Every structure is written in structure tokens, then in C-alpha cells.
Length: 233
Image 1 (tube, rainbow, N blue to C red):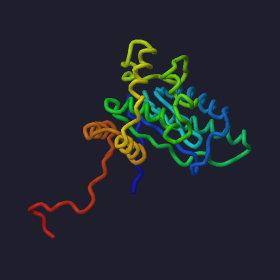
Image 2 (image 1 turned 135 degrees about the vertical axis):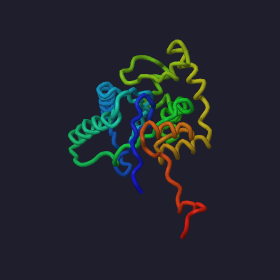
Image 3 (image 1 turned 120 degrees about the vertical axis):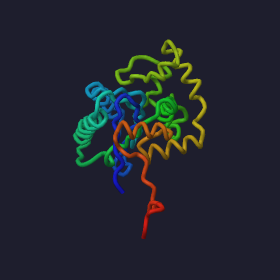
Image 4 (image 1 turned 135 degrees about the horizontal axis):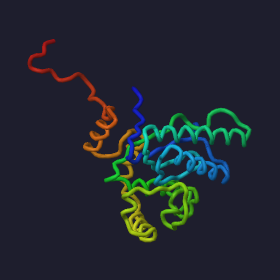
């Protein structure tokens, strides 16, 4: 089966994830998390990618990114990968790979799923049983969105900015919106799309992305094509 394309649709948000090799840890102490975020900040500015939300877990990372130039996401991930793996290998006197293959990327229909993906990413430590509340987990963008303050990483999407005139108003409305967990059926649908597809959105959105990327996203139907009246065996 051919690999699905990794898309980079300029000015459209993408969910990006990467796991440790064989699901092994890729962060070992607080300094590692801090260094990864430093790498993320530098690469996001260098390759003109807007980071809307993130979470760093012990064995995987999840990002919500809007690239503003062609190839921005792949350049960002390659840059972080080189710098962070060199740092880990040097620090822990190890060698070899750290990540379990190439990163995954899924284009997101912002009109239908943008804020849901903010919540999906920032609540991941709770779903994984790491903490009881996202406020208790330090390595995500949740603290910025709820408590505010300075960040050199997050550039919020216009849909999030539309929640209010001030950061306090946006935080309050975002908190009100995400205080209920994502519906289990919707969560299952999102999980399936993010793990197996390259687009999270309805048929019209998929068609838009196919046209923009010049790639077929939906698989061809299996089996022989139907015969037409003038076909012969």
C-alpha cells in the first residue's frame, strides 16, 4: 500500500505528531522538555510556522501548526529532530534513532475542528492518566491559554482570537467551551482520522485539499470497475 502524502497546505492548520522509537521515552527530565520547546520556538520562527497548541508527553509530541510557506512543517520537524536528537545522544551518551520513523501530519478543517483540536491536544495528559487536570501538566499550551502570560511559541489562530477582545475574555470563553470532555463518538472519529488519514474534515473540505495539493486523498474503490453497456468480456 503506498504511503499517504504528508501535506503542507499553506495557511491551513495541521495536526502533527511524532512518537518515540518503539514507543520508548524521548524525554527524561525537565531540562529535556525545556530544550525541545526552545528548539520548537526557534524552528517555528525560522520556518514561518504558527504554533497554536502543543503537548509534550514522555514518549510523543503533538502540535497544531499552520505553515505560512511551502515545506514549512517538514523543515521545522527536520530542524527540531536534528537538534534534539543530537542533544539527547550527547547528554545521555547514547547513539541511534530516538523517534519511531517519520512524523504524521493531518490537515484540519479549521471551520469545524480548530478549537476541538486545541482541547484534544491540551487534554491528552488527562486522557492518558498522567494527571487529573490539564492545569497540573506543565508541558502543554494549556497554561498559556488559561492563565495567559508571555510565550515565544504560541501564535493563536484567528478562530481562537475571535473568542474575545482581550486575552482574559478569550481564556474565559475557551475554558467554558472545553470544561466538558469531547463526546466519545467524536473522540473516536478524531482518533481514527488523526492516526490513519491525512485530512480531518467533511467531503467538501477533502475535495478542497485534493485540489490544492494535487493529491488524491480518498482511496480508490476496491474491485473491478462496473461494466458499461458497450463493454465485452
